Amino acid sequence: MADLSRRLVLTTGIGLPRRAPIEWARNVTVPVFLLQVHDDVLTDPSDVRAMFDAVPGDRKRLHWVPGTTRRWDGYLEFQRRPEPVLDWLGTTMVAAADPVAR
Image (cartoon, rainbow, N blue to C red; front, side):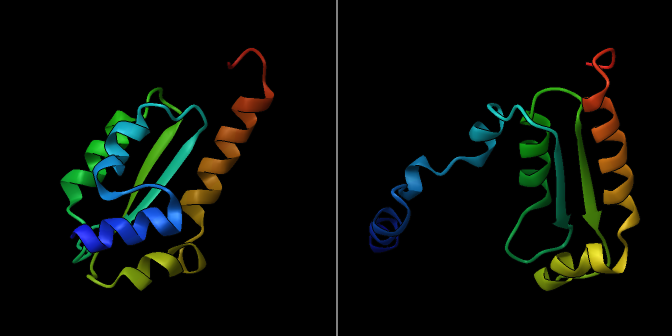
């Protein structure tokens, strides 16, 4: 793990101890559409939910991709079913353009 952390620092400037996406999520100030394969073998759904819950405000949506353990299916989700993200973008962009809605 120490070697992995060292390599991460060399590549990204951030080591493992500082990689805390749930804490980082508290600083997000833009609308968020979070997509995750629910049964992804590398990600625990409770971690994804905690990160989503940590994002402040109500301009956010969590979209689960069900019925698969393959991460790649998440990458293809918008190609297969674009409606959820298009609906969210439409609503979010209209709200952002309307000064009364802010």
